[in-house]
Amino acid sequence: MNDARLPAFKAYDIRGRIPGELNEAMAYQIGRAYAVEMSPEGAVAVGRDIRQTSVLLSKALIRGLNDSGVDAVDIGLCGTEMVYYASSLEGMGGGAMITASHNPKDYNGIKLVRMDARPISEDSGLLDIERRVRMEEYPEKATHRGDISERNVMAEYTRKVLSFVDTGLLKPLKIVVNPGNGCAGPVLDVLAGSLPFEFIKINFQPDGTFPNGIPNPLLIENRSATVNAVVDNKADLGIAWDGDFDRCFFFDEQGRYIEGYYIVGFLAKRILNRNPGEKIVHDPRLVWNTLEIVRNTGGVPVLSKSGHSFIKEKMRETGAIYGGEMSAHHYFRDFSFSDSGMIPWLLVAEEMSVSGKRFSELVDERIRKYPCSGEINRTVLNPDATLQNVEEHFAGKATTVSHLDGLTMEFGDTWRFNLRKSNTEPVVRLNVEAAGDEELMNARTAEILKLVETESTRPQFA
Image (cartoon, rainbow, N blue to C red):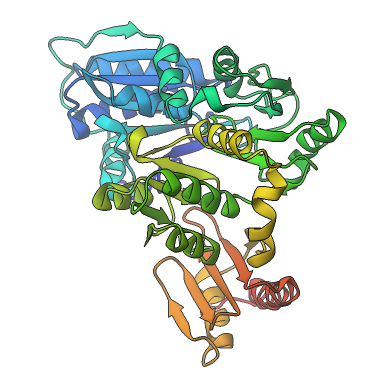
């Protein structure tokens, strides 16, 4: 019996190098395993990103579904949120998106959901699918093979996205849009017909060879194209997306990158102004700005562990109208509790139009009030030992300690940090924030990084 986990199966999805960790044979097996474990009551929507292996993997997965007696609806080239949307339509029983998002171009992957975009992760079925694939445990092929059909959901999906704003309030803003040669371009072209914006398009055409680099705006070296385009064109706003556009990243009119943390508070305030008393779910990495805004705007903040499956579960449990993570994932109750990379920037543009303010004016006060480090990643030999070492260093000084999601320590109302380990690699992720004191935030960030880097070079003994 083979008990070794398959490396492509991660905490929230399937993602690995082609063809060693993920290939057509495995995609077929995943289709078979999904059919057995999920027993979908309806067709499964299958979409794909622009990567060069995505068509083949999509066809293989569909073949696996069909051989198990499950119907599949091929929705073609799309973003992950379009699969989420399709999985909530009448007659649909689930969804699968072929994508490796922002990973290097020799990677690909699969994101799986149940009906109504309910996530499938380690704690909700993904381990069972992995076991079946690993052990090759399937029933005989179905007597009645499933059907395959094609459906273009672009028009109805974009109508849904536009329903989150009043297009009559929008002003003719000049916006730089950078899909990174991923899948966002075709959606923007359709949305443009209903919007008064002037789009400055860069890296716009979908291209799985990624001629301008992997679409990952979190990497500082990948931001310069957007920054330069905003400055050169005197644009009002810059937006960049990752490959499957379930995340969007913001640049103000000066070309300054705005941390996703401040977007969570921004969107929470805007949504609560129109929906007072609602619940807002947030992650524990950076919180003070979000907590203050939500409470001052008459909302109820709800803390959740980081990660899309946890955020979505907490939102469904509490009925929250919006959930946000500093990693640029934004979730909406009226979008099947799913994350979207299109809805957030439309809401920002609407607020700019209504208020008449530049984007910098809408976020500067919050950035000054709660300066943050942004997420800093470090490779270490032993993540658990690293967290323990940092906790021991600050023991007795912290007023609050939490292990909900990694290590969180607060020091009165002056500063706080969260240090958590990756689910998939020997990496720790640090976030530090302070109350109105950027110098203190920088000093404490340096102090913790010194501890982390010391631990990363310390010999480990059995």
